[in-house]
Image (cartoon, rainbow, N blue to C red; front, side, top):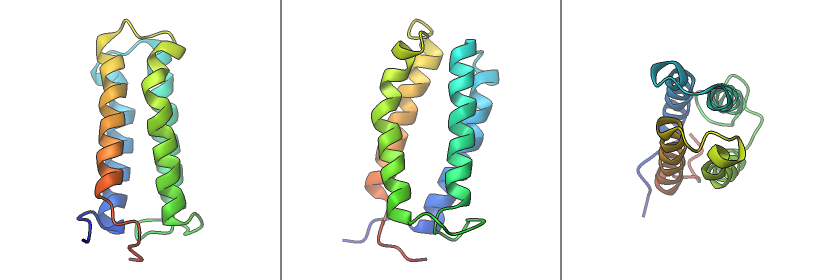
Length: 117
């Protein structure tokens, strides 16, 4: 069965997610460490997207499946970040990390990683 998220759609989701992750700290008044995490994540998402072998890339250097593996690694680490970085008591920042983890896993599960777009 073909999955519903194409490489092009995945790229749109990546850049949109990066924008949302960059905006969240200001909009939700995150503490300093959560802000730094989000800005680093936004920069990482944008950078990885810019060099992934899919339609919205600036340079196609990273295979699309490797891009997916990096996203899954981030999803594995992200739930621990509120505790590791000391902002687990900030409900908005903590739950944002959990929500971003869930979003990443759902998008990964619905992406057609064989799409050569």
